[in-house]
Amino acid sequence: MSQFGEYIRNRREELQKNSPSMFSLRKVAQEADIEPSYLSKIERGLQPPPGQTTIEALARVLDEDKDVMLALAGKVSDDLSKIIQKRPKLFATLIRELKDMPDKAVLRLVREVRDGEW
Image 1 (cartoon, rainbow, N blue to C red):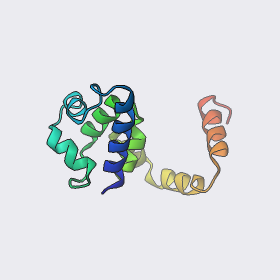
Image 2: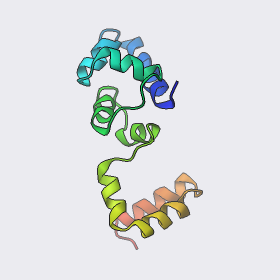
Image 3: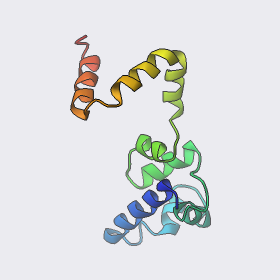
Image 4: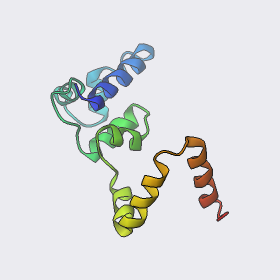
């Protein structure tokens, strides 16, 4: 089973405990505008992760972060891809430098950039 499919199934079943009718496989598929059989195959790892639009729809239905779900599927959102493509060397260097930094340090850097403190 794929990590993405397992994550989707676990999240849906977790939500289903409190709202059985809202998070059945059929209802989630309907809300994400996909076939229940397709969602079932994704959850069981019989289908590869779907495209960005479907992943974003599933994230919305399951109240999950779309970027996290895209990453679990081995994908990057189109907007981030375009940003990276504009300055690939710079962003590749930045990401490689940040990869081993603790979350706290990365968040501090993000705040500094956002607040214009650089």
